[in-house]
Length: 633
Image (cartoon, rainbow, N blue to C red; front, side):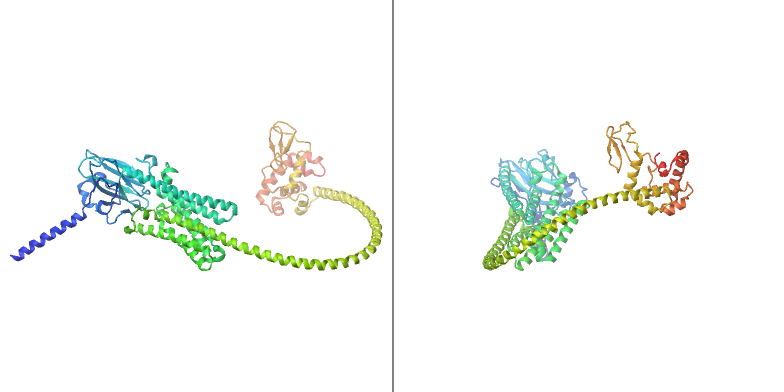
């Protein structure tokens, strides 16, 4: 009997315990209360169902069959850790008709791509609203950087809201219930602080841009680009850029932060390299920085072209950040003082980056409000201030070195002045002695100058005679050279010579084209289109362009060389050989002499022989230069 009683007591206590656990794990509805301006849904107040295959419809999700599949969040802020996968979230709100203020639900993370909200209506139906930064900004219910949904505070029954969410980045599903009055006040304050933050970035950037223009040191330019990249990244991440810069470009909004993040890392490393003289003070670290810049650009290009989901792994920026941080510590330990502010600034940035990374890994106890959420922005501001101090410290040290160098120069100039006075005194004494000596010698030189002047006059007459003779010799040389060229040309035209000797007369395309132009237009220019006789030089070598109709005629047009692919000096020699042998030379011999394929020699030779055959009567009457009669068609 005692055992039966004990058994009943045991099962009763077990039932009470299970009921208590079930009650603790059951979803807790959030009651709307007077005096509570906002409430953040957390832990059991928000339930999650992962739908990786995106196969469930809303009707299935809201059915009783799926009640047990929703699990309470085990963290204060649930996250969509599986990229591009569908998650269902469910919250419950208990209306309170005594609260007369309008209410809204707000999603705090601006990077969520797609949010489909299912809002309960008084008739038990659900209204659908599509949110997320994958949609155009002007389609939002409230034009704010976050995602807001007005809700109805009617009735007494608990209202269940469902949200279907997917994102290409790890998203924090922070759902906040706020009064409209509190939301407006909070939004105005937030935009005010955003204005201060971005205003500081612009002021620092503008100041350093002015310094770059004035001093022309690349460190200022890299610092400006780094600051602007940070601002660009922050605007892309917090939704300000989507609201004001590209509200109608949702596709660009999905990847804009990646461009900004890549630029931030690259310009941070370039600024580090320039500010700390890494190339001179740490050559190996300089090579490492250059390698990381190249690797970061390659990774960005690959991610953009082939797999944009890699953009969500923002923690990879820890590598360039760590390298810059380590470089600053190394340079500072080696005695370079401006690195101290650099190290201090990057210490704050490293702390902010580490905090965001730990929150992303799921350490929810670190996510304690707006301070932790915007911790990286605060650290960026502190880093920006201390980096400016580092630049100023570097300029100060450079100024000290310059002042010391100037003082050293002044001391040296004083020593030089004393030495100059001493030397001048010695020189004056020696100059007086030398002057007396020179005066006596000048009398002797004067008498000799008179004799030299007489000799110079005689030499001048002889020089004029030599110049006259040189002019006559130059004229004789020109006549002789002309005669030699004429004899050589006549010999080439009337005897059998080899290609080398022939090439002396027509060595290149220029000389061949010049001969063709003289031969072709020996009787004057006459346009074949409009019969005009006026021309000017065309675009092609030795071509002529009609000044009236613009028709341009090349030097080879209407000649046997038109459209031939044989080099023109070799084509000249081939005509000469065929003409001089009266067409008896074979194509094989031509191929051997000219180093041209036999088939090509046969084709062009046949063409020449045909022209010779057609012009037998003309060729019989020609003397020298008879082969040139074969050129013009």
